Image 1 (tube, rainbow, N blue to C red):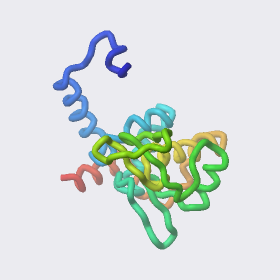
Image 2 (image 1 turned 135 degrees about the vertical axis):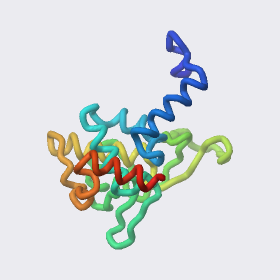
Image 3 (image 1 turned 30 degrees about the vertical axis):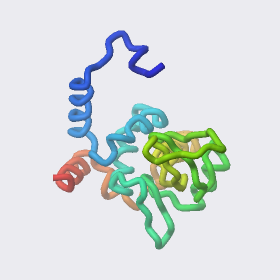
Image 4 (image 1 turned 90 degrees about the vertical axis):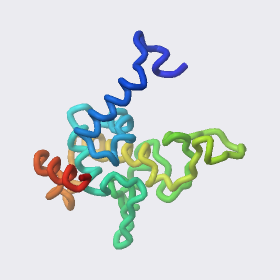
Amino acid sequence: MSTFQSMAVVPSVEEMYEVKVCLTEEIPNALVDDIPYFVQFFEPENLDTAIRIAWCESRGFSEAYRSDNKDSGLFQFIPNTWKWMSQLYDIPEWDTWVITRYGLPHKEKNKTYKTNLGFEFSKVQHIPYYNIKAAAHLAEDTYKGTRWTDWNSSKWCWEDAKEWRERWTKEEN
């Protein structure tokens, strides 16, 4: 059963498009498709900061990679921090290849997959589902409270919400 089938009123395609337009006025285009993962893993009061950090760290590009310290993904994790998160939470280890279908982990094994069916094979740190999950655990759970210090290097970009908004809207236009 799909999510919409369980709803009392099923939204039309036009209504869903309007929601996406509203989202893109509030959230960078590069992160709109990943919003369900932010909502799934972050507490509501932390969503705004998490979205700002992800944009500042990677501009919303899940394949982002910086060779000098090997940080990668939306939240630009380094291998040691990722290893720590994978040991504490249900996250595959760094550089593990994972099959996803429409962005979500796919657990079936011993099958042949065709990319036109929505299957992808990616390194775990570049999969938004896992990268956002790791960031939420790091920010909200690991320190027993919300802490954003792991992203201090980009604080100049995300700390002031108004300045951040001006920055991303200017870059997108």
